[in-house]
Structure formats: C-alpha cells, structure tokens
Amino acid sequence: MSTLTSPTAVAGIQDCWNVIGVNGDQSCEKLQQYVHCRNCDVYASAAQQNLQRVVGDDYKKDWAAHFRQAASKDQQLDTSCLVFRIGLEWLSLPTRMFVAVAPIAKPHRLPHRSSLGLGGIVNVGGTLYPCMSLADLLGIDDSEGEAATNRHTFARLLLTQWEDQAYALPVADLHGILRYASSTVQAPAATINKGLSRFLSGVISHDDMRIGVLDEALIGYQLARTLR
Image 1 (cartoon, rainbow, N blue to C red):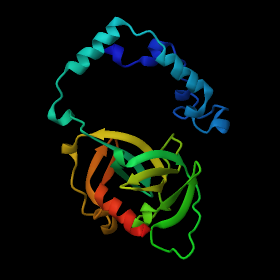
Image 2 (image 1 turned 90 degrees about the horizontal axis):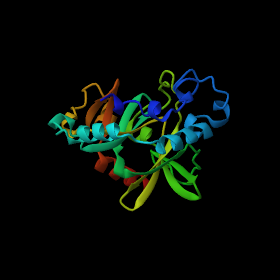
Image 3 (image 1 turned 90 degrees about the vertical axis):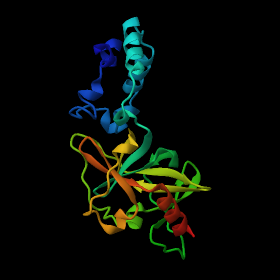
C-alpha cells in the first residue's frame, strides 16, 4: 500500500517546511515574517498543487481496499476532542464545544468583578467574549510548561460555546483535534492534583502525551457559574 503514504511525492511538491521550515531546522528567512509555514504563500501554493494533482487508478483502488476493511473494536475512533496545554497539563474537551481558534489577546478587566477564573473581556473580530481562566478554575500553575522540541508553540484563545453563552479560553499551546476510541479512556492517576482531578472523566494516551479528558458538563457549569 505504498501509494497511500507519499502524496507529496505524487504531486512533485517541494516540501520546504519539512527542511528549512517549522518542521525542519527553521532557517527559512520567511519565518520572521510569517511566523509559521502555514501562513506562507509557498505553503498555500503547495496545497493548491496537491489538491489539483492527478489521482491514479492504483491510488483509488488502494484507498477503496483500505476503507473496505472492517474496523476492530479497538480501532473504532468514535470520539473527537480538541487537545490543548495549560501549564504542564495536556487537556481536552469535546470538539463540538469549540467555535473557533483565535490569536491570544490581553483581556480588559471588568470593574467590580473579581470572580476567580474571570480574567475580563477580550475583543475577537469585533465581538466581545468573557475571558475565562481554566488555569484558575482547575488549580493549574500556568507559569510552568516548556515548548516541544523543534516545534513553535503559540498561546491561543479557544472560542467555545456552552448552551447560550460564548467564552474565550486562553491556552499555552494547541495540539489540535484528536479522534480516539472511547473504550481506551483510562482512569485518572491518583497523583493528579485534586483541583484538576474532580473535573476529569478520564485520561487518554497519544504518542508521548497523557491527556486529561475534561468533563464537558462540569466545565460548562463552572464557566456559567463563574460568569454570574
């Protein structure tokens, strides 16, 4: 099934992002301007070239055979979450809770409001969102945490919706969307701090990460309660 594994080779794309870009030695002069390869016109042009490439019959047959295979119970990736980092902790919430991801912004304090977890309000694209600190709500020291080796890390705002209220959640790093089998969720370790553990429904493993699965209902309730 070698035809499944090399789309760049098929398209004849020069993947400079893997050589001198964010996944390479980061020596590209354009990184100073674009910060990340996905913002660069070379990367965008490569994406267009990849989408417009001619797909051969063997490639189609191989993928058809791949998707005809029955998935075992352990392979049924029936759950999707967004994985992010706060301090040293990798955490996740269901993908359906999130509306968008935005650049980090400094919140403006609200007068006469000092609730733990409410950082203020932030302006994202002309819309005001209450900025909620999961670090405060979960008892996590957000001054800790290191960037992954050979990888740029960027703090971001996760724009989320719970019932009829939108929130902005600042995070130190974003891994992205992860699909996993609900049957593989494990119980949280006893060593996790009590402030965090009561909000966890379990833990999942991905590569070298142990990711805390936050309880959607508890987090939503706590956000709404903090905003009252």
